[in-house]
Length: 482
Image (cartoon, rainbow, N blue to C red; front, side):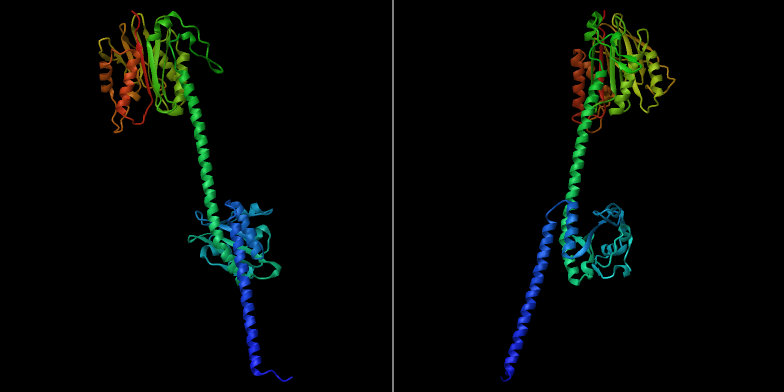
């Protein structure tokens, strides 16, 4: 055979080159397709969960697999402290790893987080940025590594790191590009997972707050019921009030009302409206003989639960120490001495008296309380002025004075707390004593219940929807004897 013509040889070479180019493009396309499929797989894995711990596990597993690395880690940035930390670490020493924190710029991961640049290192130990803090803790030798920043909305939220290419090889530039491609969707998924976790924590905190609020409201309703249980519902005699024992407060059974008690049934009206569920205003009344009515009304300096507790102690002392032959001044002196021993920062203003329904004789003692008024039959008001003492619990050696007055049949005593006189409207203007005196003077003809209701309505009308700032209590005593 003769030699092939030169033209045929040239055509053959062109054909071979063309076939080579096609093969090269085919292999390039296959590599691009493989890379695309890998990224698609990673994207699917990243979007398969919204829970941060599960997502971190998937990131580490998937990244190690697609880069053919022995290990992978996600190190997050704590922006408040300016540190990096391991949110998830597996194995026997996972707890120790989670305790490790790196400063920004410390080690290769810290350098990447600070600079925002990716690195591929063939010999980790010889790199000047290398830190053995983690490797020494877990006793895991690091030969080579890649580390890329995870960025979302221009902010570095962490770094993605893979360690030790399998089979003793080094990571390639293509591996680095692949890891960089993985880092972007990973950062978005991780940011969404962190937001979801924060949302879950907020919802749980809200649930806990609502549950705590409901428990507190329930406890306050119980406390309110207990507090109202201290207050009398009808006129009783001294023999039926609670007695004190070593074990605490013991409630004796109520005896049937006596004829005197039935006679006095219309002589007292009372009301209380705490600014909160419980409060510090209090009142009490009971018979200390066949014709003598003991009554008291007070106001603790605080509000809420502390005031309610102080109020309960004060009322218990009053009931426990009051005797038939004791004057109001003597009673307050003894009660004050006991309250002062508790070294409480609270105190209570108080007014108490003993009214003889037959003779109209009134003996009373004033512990710094709002001045009560005697409402005459003709509508005149006269203040019950006497020697005022200090509120209970202020001075240990305080001796309370007794004052006297005389009431006629049908005349009434109006006691109130400063929740009435100092009630404020939206402009912080106070209701005041002048308004109270004018109202009672013009409405003196009203029956007991109606008069108290009229006072309360006028106060509410004055405040015009402003929040009640203090407890309100009133006591109306009528002389029903001859």
